[in-house]
Image (cartoon, rainbow, N blue to C red; front, side):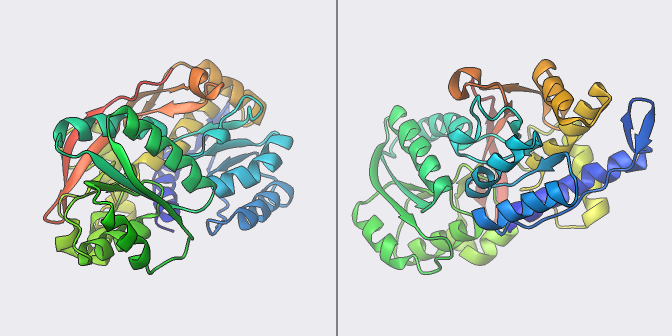
Length: 352
């Protein structure tokens, strides 16, 4: 829910911006953007039904989302068969493969993010040697755990513990008791939803864990601290970017102002990364002069650089994924200090 609602808010900001300037320019005409929303409830079966409804009843040509791997993998057979342009997110490597040419990933995955964050962790906390992983027991969690393990070991960290849990779990104490025995220096739960991350943080602190908590995803500090308890969140490391801090572009400042004008405060720092979905699509439609999925696909593949709130943005990943459909944006590292985000660094992922 946290990621889905964040995506919705960011997309609405771009929708209102485009409609306020007269609409989307397609050839010589302009059209107001209308969005049909569906909730996949983070499940494969619900996502599949939603995609079939959007395609067969609503006659959409483009789908933005889903956000996590299991729903994405469930709808791709439908979107690809119908040549529907899918601008999506998912950390699963198999979402981007050559035989899924209508799928583009609009956010960085654990592969790109952790290649920035783990070297930073290595340099910033040289005494840390052992890491523990906690991930959901599904396609998303399995894929992310592989990335976490591979990149952690590349950065000289020893994997002391790794376990999967069922989505919907609220009592993590049995799992965490096993984890603590292995004495990890930090816990990485990159694939867990924000609410689960906060619960794990709360419960592991209650069990006496003194190490770092770490996530290659974004969190809303207010919600995270409310669930976990403020003292338990101190020093939490994440891929969240404070748009009021350093590394802020003019586009990010404008996005912040537009967000507050539309949604009110407080600002949700999870949302900015989802702005890219509709932002790049609008640019592609206006460059192609069409909403035809095939023409849009070809335009997305042809144009080398897109201007986004993160600055110049491109697609890469040909060597790693077999297809150049992975968006490349900066990786941010922040820590929670007194419940507030403190930006610690930014870097561009290296991806062929």
